[in-house]
Length: 180
Image (cartoon, rainbow, N blue to C red):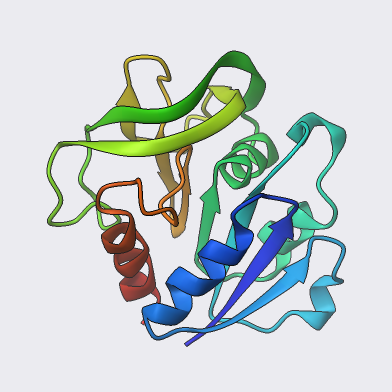
């Protein structure tokens, strides 16, 4: 399985690469300025990033429109997905560190996981309005939108690639299983 990680300037993009490789995927990291015509993959991961999604994110909109593959958006990757489909992203209270999330819809990405577990957060913006076509999968006490789904597009506010996130590897494995 060929997975492309779109580098949006996140501090842990290399950990996304490593986690996916450890799960058996062939992984390539490319900048978000890579032309859509130059990307061939079975799945796409939109990495986290610095700055604001409202400042623009390279060709991420084109990847979502034209590649037609399953997508996992992490942190800013979630923001890109939500904004692309008509959601809103705004400055939030900010979450940094360990946060407990509540899974409200187990769906495929949270399959066989507990309904509450700790994740690692590092963000100043958050999705504040979710398009009607999206399903809310998880929330926390301080952030209403922690995980979402639209068709085969998933987004998580937290960082499953870091060891501090409980079940992080299982979440990424579940995503890859959807692609196989």
